[in-house]
Amino acid sequence: MSLFLVAALGMWMSSPINAVEQQRVQDPESHDGDVIPADQGGATLQDGTGEQDSGEGVGIENATQRLNRVSERSNNPEIREQIRVMIESHVQVQTKAKTALSNMQARFKTLKFFFGASYKNAGEIKAQAAQLRADAGELASLRDSLTSAADQEEIQGAIDSLEVEAVVLENELEQELEGFSLFGWLNRILSGY
Image (tube, rainbow, N blue to C red; front, side):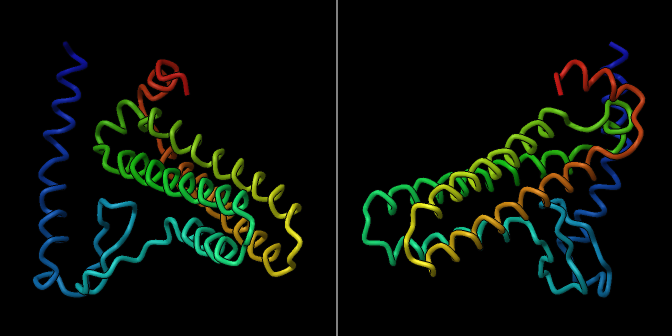
């Protein structure tokens, strides 16, 4: 019962602040020059222009573009199919990672203080970073099977992009896990993280 009261009090205390920030994000004309953190993937809105400044997914998009170029040049249907499957995997990883990260960032600060970060979402982000590294390993074996130097260079660029994206995800996860919480240790044990 007391756990419910603490959670309800935490949501009640943090919701007026979030409502004000949400209004500021939706109405940039009345708040010119402000830098306002948005809830969507850590992006920020600057100078009331409504443009987002986010680097998320850039590595995956770069890898996807490179793989599409290799697929277009390839005459081998097996390689085309393998690249198509890899691109689908990258899109799924990007979607799952963005969703988990935005869920972690949307957690009320009071709940985070009492119970820590959302370790379920943290585990999902960690799994997606591992999937990116596994995909990079599969691309390395594909690169070795190709004969064209241009295709090998494109695949190497895709590998590098995926590695960078995995590091970015891990760094964002570390930032979300930072901070003090009273019962975060218990939440971490119960969630199996």
